[in-house]
Length: 91
Image 1 (cartoon, rainbow, N blue to C red):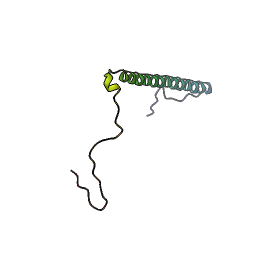
Image 2 (tube, one colour):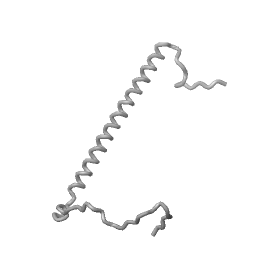
Image 3 (tube, one colour):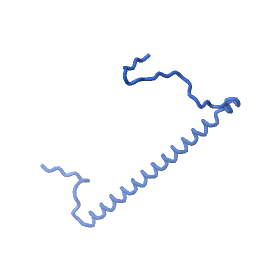
Image 4 (spheres, helix red, strand yellow):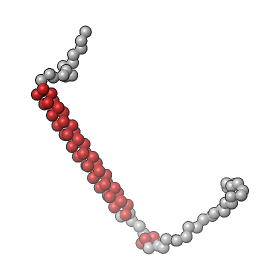
């Protein structure tokens, strides 16, 4: 028994083969252009969203005293000197 699907049989006429190749290339080209347009819209939209988010964060109300407060240049905290000759005990 031979199974023949109507859309999958090979056309024997050379002009029909050439037209199907050209049609396939056109379809692939249209899909690639559509994909590039969608990727461009997503990239521009993402960039605009990031800019908008940063702009909104910079406009958050900061009190006047906190805006002009001097940031310390020294990080304060506790530290432990670790020597290589003895094992480290965690607190």
